[in-house]
Amino acid sequence: MKFGIDIGHNCPPDTGARGIKFEDNLTMEVGTKVIAKLKSLGHEVISCKPDRADTVKDSLAQRCNKANANGVEIYVSIHFNAFNGQANGTEVYATSDKGRQIAKPVLDEIVKLGFFNRGVKSGSHLFVLKNTSMPAILIESCFIDSQKDVNLYNAEAISNAIVKGLTGKLPTTPVPPVPDDEQNTDTTTLRLKKSLNRLKITDKNGKPLVEDNSLDELTKSAIEKFQNIAGIQATRVAGETTWNAINLILAKRIIRPNHAGGTVVRYLQYRVGVEVDGVFGPQTEAAIKTFQRQNGLDADGIVGGMTWQKLIG
Image 1: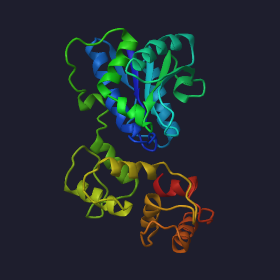
Image 2: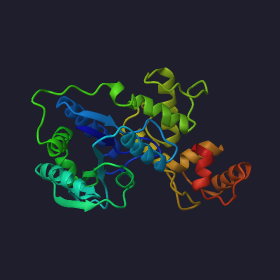
Image 3: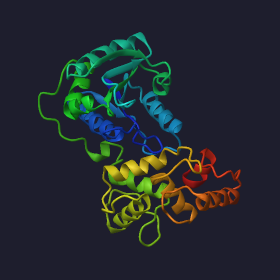
Image 4: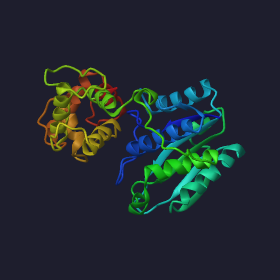
């Protein structure tokens, strides 16, 4: 069987939900295990996550195109949910009778781990299910803003449940980690450098980072620079707090004067050359308007889609 495994998000600006845990970390952890286990069982696996994308839609389209071009027989997109801190459980989306037949045993195996069964649901609104040409499912493994679900989370157990639901069996011998070159060579350090370059965070010499997997001194200096800008502890190590700050900025939410503050505003202040204090006051608003005028935009002081496009693409 040829599977297309889509490790959800992990391709800025296509980034996942945030809760008690961060979706990008969990989809990568579970997805790589699923890929390794399927290969250990003798299946062919196409990793559908793109290396980079210009927009979220571009990221989604690349995933579908890769699955379609490689003629995969079953497409599986792995995700984690977040809502209001109270919702919990597992749900699997599908759009066809065949897809629902594939989804049901996967859901059944995951809920055996203790998660509430939210059912197999229609995925007719989901881009990756609408635009793949084979039976496809999208798994919302659990809610990462639910303490109940987070307490149950175990990457090994969930990946086993997905694989058993898809194939009816599990590897009988330990599965080695997936080599970097089978994960689109998109390791954490490479993703970090791509993200920092996109945010125009330079190294200590004022130069962009070389986009490779080397965590060298220049990279650490850029991490420290970003941490200082974001107002988080300058550890020179990109842990969860740093990644949360990066992804918060890459989400490109609309920012309005007097109604915003914190990490994103600090980054905007850095980019427009005013004091970095995290407060969107008159000085910051004036600098944003100047930036907008210089870039041929409507100078309204509101950081929306067009302004973000000029800032980070």
